Amino acid sequence: MIKKKHLQELEKNGYFVYPNFLTKKQNNKLWRILESLPKKDLHFSYSRTGEKVKKDVSILAPNIMTYSKDFISIATNSKILQVADDYFFRASFNEEKNPYQVHIMHARKVEDECGEQQLHIDSRLRGADPAYMLHVFIYLDDCIKPHSGGIRLVPKSHKLKRYAIPSIDEKKAKEIFAKKGTAIFMNSSLFHAGSEKKTPGTRWVISLVYSRWWVRQPFAIPYFKKWPKKLTAREKILFGFYNYGDASIKRGISARGKLPKLIPIKND
Image: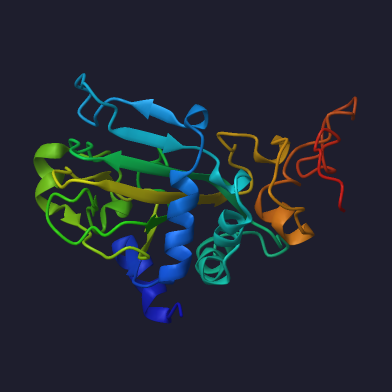
């Protein structure tokens, strides 16, 4: 259960940790789905340090909500939306009923050893106030020891009007050690990075991001051709289906226009 203190921590420190967000059964099911994804749908890259390596160590599974209804259920989870409501409604127009959308939903896997990332902010906007993006990282593997690749954060850095300076901010970074099934809620203007991984085995993390409805999605989610289930009206709203202007209007467009005609799902 999300408590008031969690929301206060998010405001004050820029993040809070929610242990046991997933049950063991949920966690293992999501892990198995990701492990079974076809290789052609994954993006492989070099190590985080940018050095060329013999083996691919960083693997990205993009847009995972299109693979299983279980990921859709995570993106529409009532506990997450409780935080998102508090996070986004406070700085929205009174008449706005749906001020936010799912921005992206990816999963990343690190295999065996991997270097650390540099501290960065995914919102690309320093000290954004009011905040306009919210991250939820979900560990699907244990990160309970040093050098196991956990996320490190710089508390309160979401209020700074500058980008990260390694010589200053690395000293303040805090690595989040947690068991699988843990969720980390984070202001997207908080300095953060993946830590160095020296332990054997895999490390899967789900990265779920929400943004205000007017922020462009990196992928036009409503135009994906395949979904694992028919979406409800509420789910379509959360995935941004109504945030695209009607291109059929000759003189101008509606800011939150009609459902785009190209969308293949027909269950309105």
